[in-house]
Amino acid sequence: MHQLPLEEYQVRTGDSFHCATNVEKPYGVLDDILDWCKLNMLQEWRWQLVQPSSDVSPGRYIFYFDSDRDMCAFKLRWD
Image 1 (tube, helix red, strand yellow):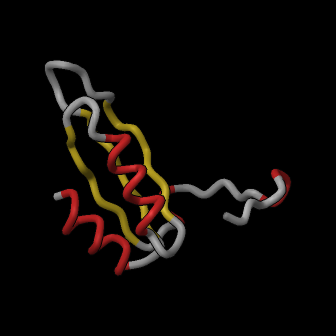
Image 2: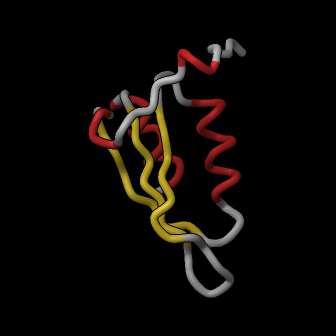
């Protein structure tokens, strides 16, 4: 895996991505989603915590994508 030097990293806001989707998932599922994204996304993506999960309520997250293909694959897998 190619890593950029720290000074070359770019902070991006959510509105700089092509598309986004919201998901609600129970406690413990976020790690599975992130592992899946690391293996399957072809272009840039990010996620944002909206509400943390707990044993009584699901977590809410926004996932941002540069590619329609990546967002469609994500939605097919995690919706």
